[in-house]
Length: 265
Image (cartoon, rainbow, N blue to C red; front, side, top):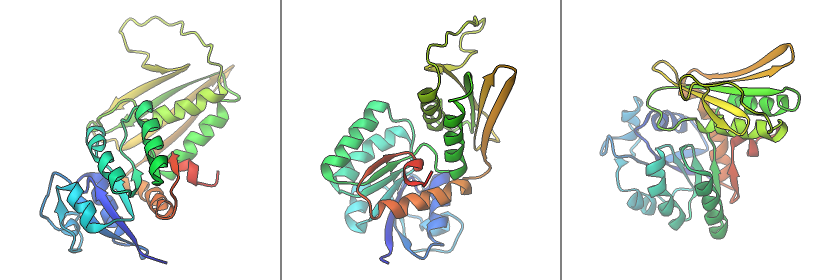
């Protein structure tokens, strides 16, 4: 098997650093470049608290793509940075694993079209924790049998977007099987107290220190409730899913939205 050459964008971030540590432990992949606007000039390994790996953090993404010739680029930045990075990925025809959230539905559709026109593989996932994917799948099943659902998602205060991409994707799955004719009957004494609405699903976003990524879906039915909850206690929880995505996109030129699309569910 050929070694998979990986470039990490957002290398100095918490997810980027965890991913670099994880890649360094794999036998079938190697980090060939790391890009960020922070820690430029530092060895990526030493930045992450491991031994030096001979990869220096760079700011110039275009130059890094030309020099390193990655098989897969992993983007864990933020939405505004991703919007600037995508044209470079497309121009260099490099397959992508994108964990950055905040793109609109229209932007995702355009990205899918761009990838298909250029025969570029891309997997965009709002959550790479395998348990979170299962939580979304279980919620979609439960929606067939329960009357109503509300979502509460909890993240650290540095998260830029609300609600989370995971909450939106969960709500979209629930809507497929739930009655969308539900009419909200409560009156908000404090505007926004019922959260945001995606169809018939209320979504509540909590941003507090101490949280990493957590979500619970509460279903209500006659005389009963059902709660499905997933907790990521550290960013290590995302690594098995990201590795799965990297290995798939190293040999697949299709576009996927959601880790579930490459899992046998």
